[in-house]
Length: 455
Image 1: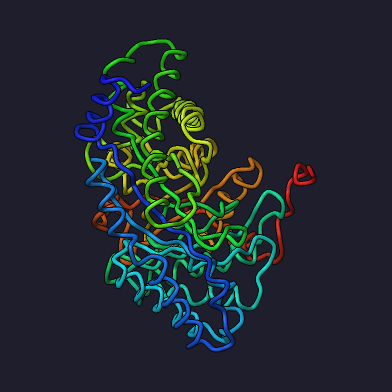
Image 2: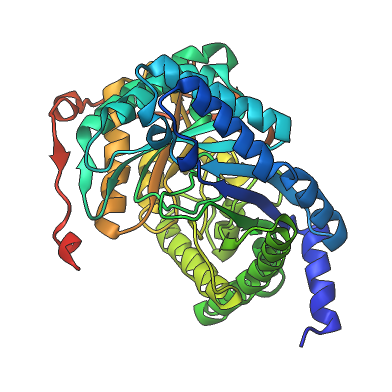
């Protein structure tokens, strides 16, 4: 039974502590839109998106007003476009046409982003996969709301190092294509290992081929709520009490997401998929994962003990969330993007946080090196090496990892870059000057670890 005090507590979370539903994401299969003609495929994609998602934004806004819970973003994820376009695309420019169709649909529908301009190349690239990947820089430069992702490895297959090498070059080219806008194209591009099929968060969202025709997934967010609760009741308490408080708070946050997800699915006449219970920060003061780590007892993220504190936080968020919903999915944990978290930015400015420490933290969190600005002259091979490192962490630890790195054209270490909105702003961080070019030049795959034979 829900008590009056619990209702009051939830209202306080919304009004004072930045609790929101970060996104309602409609996953849409476009497999039935594939045709041998690029034009017919584009027309079918546009028509299906408008038919299924025509009321998505309106429904999200209505639920937000009626329930008193802000629904910040309304988004769409689609079948990886490399699969959809394989039957009709003969050159990268054909895929760019599809990207522009997605962008046109997103603008017509009013959604914030549409994800799934993607390829899954964990074990190798088909000609269509490679064409889509080579089209990414132009697609990101000529669209506003399209997000792209490439999955280069998995625990079962190993890491496709040919794709990793290519993605180092693609990230650099995307940065150059959008140089006049602080290389923002790279903020819409992520490279993953073990990418989930049901992730509602951009830029890595796509609607996996194992999913149904259409589904509603929801991503909740509440780092400000967790931070406020810890500040009010957990300073100096034993770890057992700290963990219990985080777990109970995550339960309440996830219940809000479950309620919104089920109502959205009902109103749109679609199945409810999953709730992603990630703690996703924003640039707003008081909405920071870094501040939670400071409440646990760190002077700044990056101090000794940071990885342990993040592991504790991530685990308790998951434990609380799975009690609140039978369908938890996506990434579900703590995000540590630099540009989108003011506390992380402060830690970089203080000299406490480096890329190397962030990499260590990704071993225990839900994603990877996210929204990190680096000098524009960083070699493509170094970017590929960073991608390979993160993919290896994901592969060995059977978890999702990702790299969203932005080599900002014309910027050097210590400069600042402004992306705006939820993408925030960031200091440019240093990258090791030592080369990995000879390693990256090798062809082939890094084999899967031995536990890939568990079946």
